[in-house]
Amino acid sequence: MDKYTGPTADYHFQPIEVQLLGPINKSASHFLIVFVHKISRRSGDERETVFLFQRISVMLQRFNSILLHELFVREDSPE
Image 1 (spheres, one colour):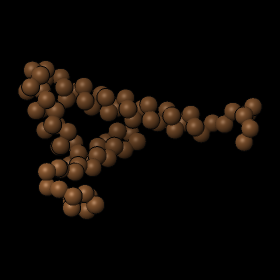
Image 2 (tube, rainbow, N blue to C red):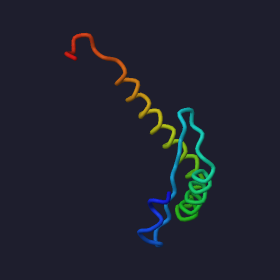
Image 3 (cartoon, helix red, strand yellow):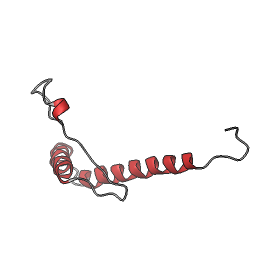
Image 4 (tube, rainbow, N blue to C red):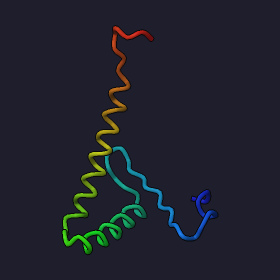
């Protein structure tokens, strides 16, 4: 976080940590909830929070499937 404090005060750097089984760090969770509530107020759809966390879950599952796929080496491929 110290790396991003100097460039400008116009931006807020928020690291987001999502663990393998899904828990998100507290500060990122708070940030995302506040962010999505602002979006919900604009769009009028109260389901935006659910949609965001579902998207994060799907993104994590896709990333994990790619990592799992890379673990297996085809027998007919040259190494």
